[in-house]
Image (tube, rainbow, N blue to C red; front, side, top):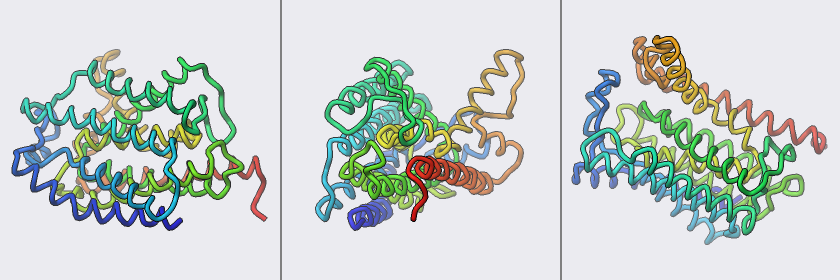
Length: 344
C-alpha cells in the first residue's frame, strides 16, 4: 500500500513540476501544434501550442514506478511487460508527433507504419505474456468469465485491443484536458481494481506480486495525468499529442488484459467508446446516405458547433466517464460477490 501511495505522490510531483520544463523546451525548439483547417474555428487560436506533452506523463510515471520499488513491492515480468507496452506505444506516438512537427502538417505517420508499430508491440505482448508473465491467453470478461484462445487468435485479440484503445483515447484528445482528465479517472479505477485483486489474489488469475506491481503502475499514471492536467486544463499550455494518447490507450488495453477485465473495459472506458462510435457512425451514415449524423465527429466537436462552451463539454464528458467507471466497478464487484460470496 505504501509503495502505491509513494508512486502516486512521486508521479504527481514529477508531472506537476516537470511539465513546465517540457513546455519551455518545446517552445524554444518550435514544437507547436498544427491545427486542422476543417476543425472548429475556435481551435485556430490554439495553433502553436506546444505538443508531445505526453512525454511528461510517461517520464513521470516511469520514474515513480522505479522509485516506489525502492520502498516496497516486487518488480515482476507482468509489470515490466505492461510498462514496456506503455513506453512502446508512447514511442510510436512520439514518432507520429515529430513527423507532424518536422513536416509542418497535421498528419504524421501513415496508417501502415503506425499499425506496424502497434502490431510489433502487440506481438511482443501476446508472445511474452502467457510464457513469462502472469497473463492468461484468453478473452476475459471479468474474473473467471473467460474463453481460451490459440496463440494466433490471442495475438489478433491483443492487437485489436491495443489499437482500438489507443486510437479511442487519441480521438478523445480533442479538447483541453478531456483525455488527461478522463484517463486519470479510468486509471484511478484500475488502481482500485488491482488493489482489490492484490488483497484477494486467491480469487483471481493474477498473482499477489503481479497485482501489487500493476497497482503501482496505474497509480503512477493516474497521478501523472493529474499533474499534467494542471497545465493541460483550458486554456491548455501544452497538448499531450499522440505521444500521450497512444501511450495511455495502449496501457489501458495492457492492464485490462492483465487484470482479466478486457470486455469490462467497454464500461470503464465508456467515454472513449462513445467517442469512437460517434466517428464510426458518422462515416457509416455519410457513406450510405450522403448526410452527416453529427455536425462534426468525434462527438465533442458536435457539441462545440452547437455552441456549448469548451469547459462545459469537458466537465460533462468527465461526468460521463465517471458514470461508466462506477458501472464498471459495480460489475467487477458484483462478479466477485456472485462467485465468492458477500463479505462477512
